Amino acid sequence: MKSAVVVFPASNCDRDAAVALEQISGTKPAMVWHGDGELPDVDLVVLPGGFAHGDYLRCGAMAALSPIMRDVKAKADKGLAVLGICNGFQVLTEAGMLPGALMRNAGLKFVCRPVSLEVDETQSAFTRKYEKGQHVSFPVANGVGNYYADAETLDRLEGEGRVVFRYAADDNPNGSARNIAGILNEKRNVLGLMPHPERVCDPLLGGTDGRALFESLLEALS
Figure 1: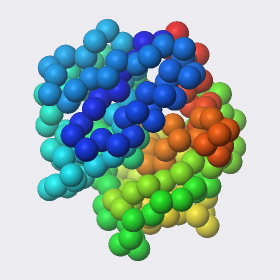
Figure 2 (figure 1 turned 45 degrees about the horizontal axis):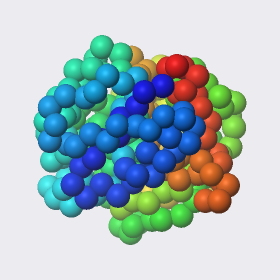
Figure 3 (figure 1 turned 60 degrees about the vertical axis):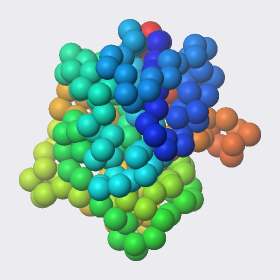
């Protein structure tokens, strides 16, 4: 599996994503600067967490207009797998690649801690190595992670099996609608999620619940 990680100004999880990808795939990902015009030949691109462009305007709004995002969108339309984590999820919604929006956390505070999640959908390249209903723990680190969409969109996401992860009912850290933590696009090749699977891929970091996501991609894309 060949992969790339897009680096935006003020990204701070790009190296975390690169380490996880190399550990699990055995191949170093390409680190692609946001100002580049074209992705290399890869099977997967990761939009990492962080605070792209200092989170000015709206989180992810400036990053969504980066030159590289034109190629990310074009290749995603042709089937390229795209994973957006935290700030990357915000970029995907701002770029129109996923529906809805991320708003300020309901408590108006930055939340940084492990959260309990339920795997809601396993019929995807991102989650095939999880069990439906499986409970996992990923850390969150965001102040703007409150997922919002209108009722019709939420119904469609649920009805089409595009809600992949949900926060446990008693552990929603940001007020996201219907406890949604991660969603797929219509073609099911783009996943955005707020929690950080790349931070729980090594027991030395406190957990391995995120490994199955990257192992799923390795199986699906190799």
